[in-house]
Length: 397
Image (cartoon, rainbow, N blue to C red; front, side, top):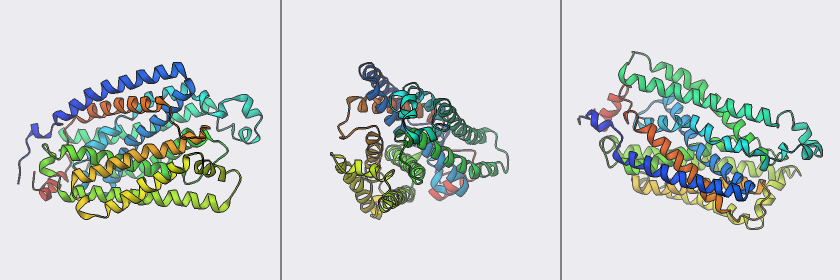
């Protein structure tokens, strides 16, 4: 049995370093994006929306997996629970970082143009839902739901560290059950608002499910990258077993397969129906260079990770598994780019320089916020009554 001291439960120095470096890089990226907006407002707003959708998947996926762990239990979640909590607590800050999209929405959403709406019978029918005041109100509601769940569960978890009450863990399960339903509904409506309404003539009933899977892939990929680094330092070096890394690898494999299943299901349903309001969405992504992005997604987001993750040895090695997780995170951006840019009228996949600026800017800010949240509490839920049992099975207490 290994004794863990209070000092061992603090975030490693690399987290503080990450906070400072990420903030500096993020501010440079945001400044470049602002400069890009002054030169080309539409291109910069498009880039910012793309980066925002990409980065918000990390805290949303963490929130979802945190509630899954509260419902299912198991030792796998103990080393990463505080990672999920810290990531989820960045959601109110993401709400503020999304304000530029609200301010620039007239540049990218055609349904904000009254003249175009009046000339389009479909947009006229959708106007009661697709209008600026209701869009902003829904935006606020989504973040109220997500932030309420994140801070309530995280607050209970941190209060356990110093003021544990017997049986208090039951309330985590009571909230996480309906919380997952609320989270799924809010995420579905949010991705319909933010992405699907870019092309208001197109629709898919699977689109929300795909966004939920994208969130899970983002959260697991992020965890794998952190574990590859933190498993070499206390306390993770003493409690993270090869079996835990193996579990995270199995999670990643599961979500990769589920993503492929839903993506192919959406394609198959739309292609076989061959309806004029649906099929152009895929036809646009099969020409003018977009077909190479489609192939890249098939290979890089499914086939390559799938066959690599079939290896048991790879799934039990943190460093090698982190490389696969990193590949998945790269392909997440490719996936969003493939979804967003054709809907905004881009016939070719040629990127704008603000794509990189916004991605780096928002990413740096989010990573800095995450690091600040993560180091604000012990890296393990020391008040959880199941922690001794979990640590005992890991050879520590």
